[in-house]
Length: 378
Image (cartoon, rainbow, N blue to C red):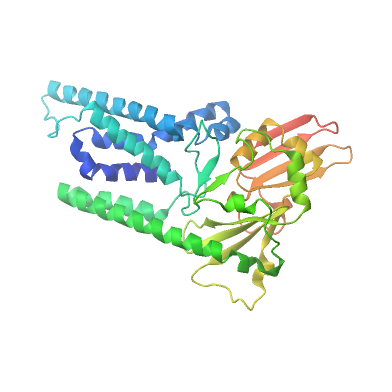
């Protein structure tokens, strides 16, 4: 989720019974609710470094423990310095006694864990087991920014300022709305995936041999057959592309409507995409499956070579649906471009016209396979 939502959620938790631990609790929850995104400091090493470490160890078990201590320490010191300064100015200190450090640490740990749990149901995903397991895990229930959740949390905080009792009641209502919102989106996601085969019509191929492994379990995860920071096995990819089959069907949430989804058919040699509105399902008698947008994903020798570069390795470790195209010039040089279909912009009927974005990786190779250029982004 976005940091504004994390912040509002932390402040809302501060209005619940957790806030009774003493002064400094709300500050602790605010810090802890944003602490895992401290990985933003890796942007100092460039966009590729950020993508490599994004939602990594700071979102894993070690991050929960360490960031809980850091957030609690900052709040503990800050609260006591503020009380001391208030006493020196003869100002009235907070009525609540300061929370103990163990209490702040417990509250901070809850805040960090809630941050990770809120990232998990988004289509973006997170790596909650890193650095022990670098794979990404996700449910596709929520967009990265949920405007309804933002409004509910903000409204609860603003209206609840009238009194402490009102604040606690509104916080409880906001959290109840949050649970209902998650439930509605989870149910809608299940329905969108279930309608997938009918959306793509009779041309949808049979499932791949490893489709059962992809659909196994209660949560989506990627990459499946390699460490997140290891290059893919080119021979396996080319063999898989030779036989057209269906790997999985996924549904990506819309930013506005919980009933509108982008359904993706992950084929062995391409991705096909359709938009579905669960409140206005298409007529089964109409052959509108022809409207599917196709993104080729052909693994050529040039693509296999580009996958061994650092940009290729990092991007393929991050991307869940990496569509790739390659162009070989007259002199034998090649340009390979990957796009993550989760972030495809607009309705694209020709992948060559797809607008590059931050989630685009480009590698240029000379005729001997040497790297001429590799970059992330437009």
